Image (cartoon, rainbow, N blue to C red; front, side, top):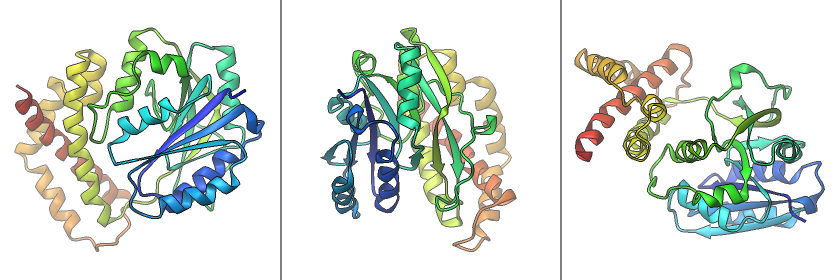
Length: 301
């Protein structure tokens, strides 16, 4: 009997996906007790052939859904629709679960059958030189429902209608789920032994454009989040409050964004962003986020 579904979605990450699936299959739990459900959200690289190679080595039930690119919320719902486990475990396509991962989620779920189980994520820059798998507070995420490493009874996620597909751009779709589950008083527990390695390669100058595009998309979806959840948690998380908006209005008036852009433009195209340069890139993304947030709020009126 299948007790757990490991669900992940992927888009154009073929090289990384192979390692992730290997880790999903390399579990100490008996293979007949869990399954892996993968949604290929319209990848245009070699993801399809990577999946077929992985299928040949899958010790457990391995279900693949291929669909046109529709965004993460829609892809998650496709995964939920094909899940069979009593508990569904969500991960991303850039994490490596440890061998005890599925067993830990099931064990924690047995102790609190109704609860969300949140696991830990250890950020790594190199998947070939992994640190000792010991969770520490610096790897902590306070999100109530964070799909990098979280599980919930399948019946519970289906009861709230899964993910809201109006979140078609980057950001907030899992926060929305968490807020809806919290509103239903679904408890959440943390299991520090349910660990994944979260691959975060060094940022480079060429990544700044994508960082800014994500910031703009996240600002637009933030407005959708607060429309659905006019609650202090959403206002604080998104920055849609007078303190944060006022502060960034002042930084825009002071021309902070333009000064940061000027400094970053002097870097070599392939330069690794470390220390001060990385802080500047993140500061610029924050400025772009709040700039786009103001536009989106005006457009909503």
